[in-house]
Length: 96
Image (cartoon, rainbow, N blue to C red):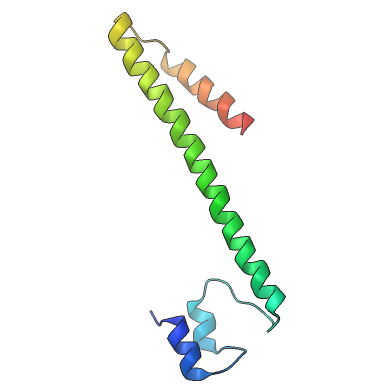
């Protein structure tokens, strides 16, 4: 894969080249700085949203797993059945 920064420095064009467009994940259609700022903000927003979603999912699943393990070891029977766990996960995901 070609390093985009090196390619742009070597070519020296503001609009970019076909190779730069091929290796990039986002192609800006103009040379406007506002478009670049919007693309960076958009990318950061997606990253933050994915990070929050994964943190929420891992927290819920980890808590449910710990509750099940501790409850089963103390009470010698399952705290929640498989169907009840699926119901809890469905309700939690619906709220998010």
